[in-house]
Image (tube, rainbow, N blue to C red; front, side, top):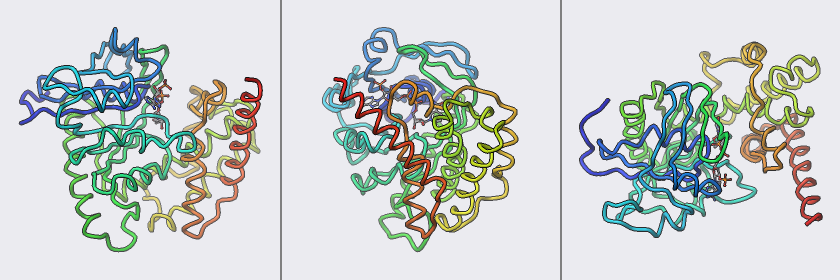
Length: 361
Ligand SMILES: NC(=O)c1ccc[n+]([C@@H]2O[C@H](COP(=O)([O-])OP(=O)(O)OC[C@H]3O[C@@H](n4cnc5c(N)ncnc54)[C@H](OP(=O)(O)O)[C@@H]3O)[C@@H](O)[C@H]2O)c1
């Protein structure tokens, strides 16, 4: 563990105090090193404000996390100022980490966080899917953005209690203009990438040295986008299929020969489109669709989050897992008909469900 403090206090605010937000926030807060982590909560605000976050983790045991400050809303986190007490820092947040579900069809969270962002703020997005960074880059053309992909199995089992079942991997990369090296970057983009790299290195060091997370990985913009698209191979195949197949878990889907063909079909569509989208095929060290399928067969685990969201009547991350990939591929001249079909069907299922709920009110 690092014992020396940062030369000045670092204030980090997580927006979205759910499974991922609370877990990663709890591994960053280290007042002895002048790294202070705060949370913006919503439905679980009163529990966390009273008792902190209870963590039951596979990797670090059970513990309680008392954040530097807890806010009931973004507005409160933007307005409450304090010299060095338990509020927002007077001179603005150093990092704003977004760990809400990525639901651009429901809310523009780049707009949500706008009151929190000052010239010194670095925006960090830890969310699934692709194209999540674009609204943030449009709204904040001069702030460094770090894109984050995590492989963690975490859930909020009751308000303010987070269970981390396994894995801690978090992959980070600076986000420039989304062109990932296709063509020369402008001077402004080069500056954003350089600044993003430096801010990312600090964040990775704190998570590793202060938080004890062993598999924090730092990448270039292109490498990180490659990881996003590779994770999408799994998410875009299994998550929507879990809903459309009537509630089957990942391993169970593979027992059905028709569903298995459909899963491999979606994965292969992404595999074929990626070189045209990113200008490079997936590197050989990343698991191929066949390998992903074989390892998933052995892993009869929990239900995918999209199925849990569907069953609970919550919005699903359809746009970042299906809609954006279809649109980004189309822009690059590639059609992904299997993804497009399942996107259209699930989007309609969600719209019909929400309309019928509205009609009953
Ligand atoms: N959980 C995992 O194991 C895992 C693994 C890899 C990737 N991911 C990805 O990580 C992201 C976060 O997932 P998660 O599992 O942590 O979701 P989650 O448990 O549902 O947490 C999201 C949190 O954001 C809060 N929120 C939403 N809008 C807000 C607003 N306007 N103001 C304040 N808080 C707001 C929600 O509050 P309410 O409770 O009030 O709705 C909730 O506490 C998603 O993109 C997910 O796909 C998750």
